[in-house]
Image (cartoon, rainbow, N blue to C red; front, side):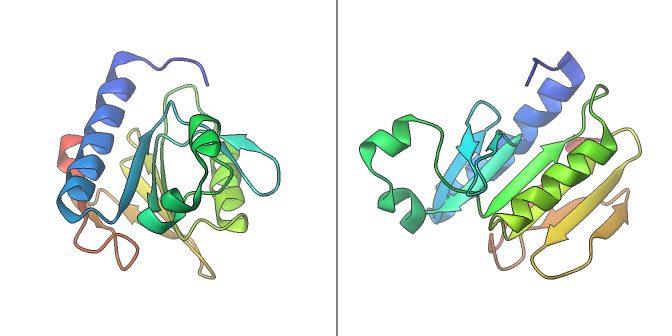
Length: 150
């Protein structure tokens, strides 16, 4: 993925920071930023803008696996649309994450102030201008403050 512009980079840093702070408090898993690669079960290489896996999945990886693209699909992903991203392509990527085991995904579109929520076995939910998002049962007590992103 090519580097993003300043606005997208700043928003993405804020999103990752909020997720990291929650995880540091609860210690339920491991957080990754957009520089981390994942080798999905279907063989695709992906690097979501932010991702999280439960601690038990991290601990099950070998030291060698931890140093390479992680051989799994994260339980939780965030994709933040940048001006150069195609909405159709990003939606397909979100569905690919679900098809490969991701349990919860958020597609955040700053331009339209919409969030698409992807959950296993459910239709996509679209929220317009939400102030926050709940991590639901996947990320207990996590709330992403979107007023810092918009």
